[in-house]
Every structure is written in C-alpha cells, then in structure tokens.
Image 1 (cartoon, rainbow, N blue to C red):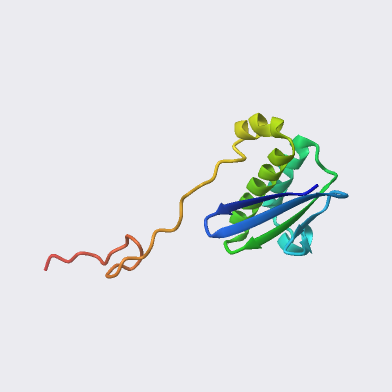
Image 2 (image 1 turned 90 degrees about the vertical axis):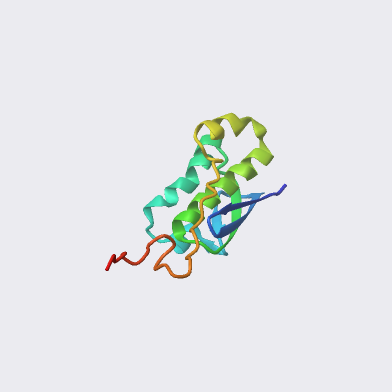
Length: 126
C-alpha cells in the first residue's frame, strides 16, 4: 500500500510517498545522509516516525526549491500527512507537538525607490 502527500514551506514544494519496506528515507533519489550531509536539524524528520513506531516503511521524497531548513520542515509535514493517511489516531499527538503548523510567511517584495523592502535612504532636511 502506498500513501502520497504534498506540503509546502516558504518556496519549497515537497511530495512524499510512503511504502512498505525496511525503513529507509530517500530524498531526490539520494539517501538522507548524502542529501543533507552533517546538518544537525535533519533529526526533525525522524520525530514523527519515532512517535508513530513506523520505522518499517520507506519514504520517497521529491523536494524542489527553498533552503535546507525549510525543506526539512516541509518534509516533516509531508511525513506526518502520510502517517495520518495510514493511521488517523496519531492526529492528536501531532497537533499537540505542532507538527502540522504551516507557516505562511514569505519574504516581502522589494519596492522601487527603496534599498530593500522597507529600508529607505536617509532623509536629509537641507
């Protein structure tokens, strides 16, 4: 049986597929160690798997755009959605730990005449 979910964080889009297997996670056809390297925050991905005891399932994840941290948070949301499709009883646990909180903040666009989105040149009275 396979379960598919989609998630977003900032500009990164994530497609997650869960299948029966031996507990491996592949991100863009690479292992999680090769894709993220020694990044400390990659342990956030394993939290929903540890809480739900689903270490025997393989996850195939396709990630596009964004930075590494937003990709990690988006992957965690996608894994949680797949687990809920598999077994809905974990919803209370995931809600209590804020695993579903999707942050809609994005970078504000730069306005013309400004140096950045809100930074202006210093005003001179004379």
